[in-house]
Image (cartoon, rainbow, N blue to C red; front, top):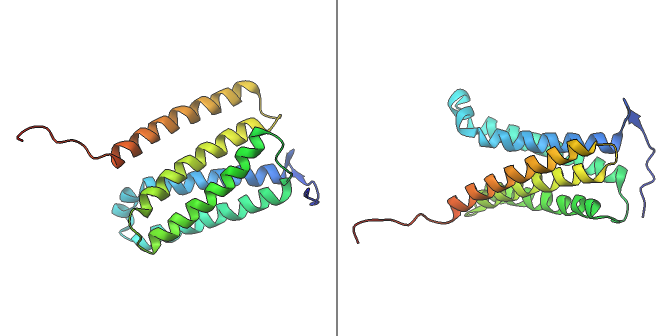
Amino acid sequence: MVSTLPAISIGGIAIGDATGFLALILIGLSSMFMLLRSKLLKVTKNIAAIRATHIAVSALAGVFLLVHVAYLFTPPVSVSMDLGYVSVAVAVAVWLTGTAFLERLRDSLFFHGALSSILIGLVMVHAATSSVNIPLFLVEIILGTTLVLMVANATYHFSRAVPKSRTGGR
């Protein structure tokens, strides 16, 4: 089933593309918001407001993601489109692990953070490779930056997941 929504564009960018980029920006903003949570908590001293803002930004990202898929839905015919649909599935998993964290399930925050990192990487690769309107040099910069950030993030999560061995005494 191919989308039958009208092709509307604003300033030369189609609504479907614009909402996809807005979803990506909001997902990144939501992630950065949580990375800076401790600093924000020192300033605001209100964890409930920080969480509510994170949830609101994430929900808005989800709305834009749904509009993006609704406008651009076609059967997957390329690897870049496959990555887009995998990204949507990972976004649902991120949402579920975030909900699990709110329900205080053990280790859900770790999985929520790890899946969020994977989601952003998938979306970046999808965005860089699915459009012919992005110049090749910019695609290379996006993919290279994504690779470096994903390796750094994976190293960070691996260091948190694997306990450090204790040296000395015994």
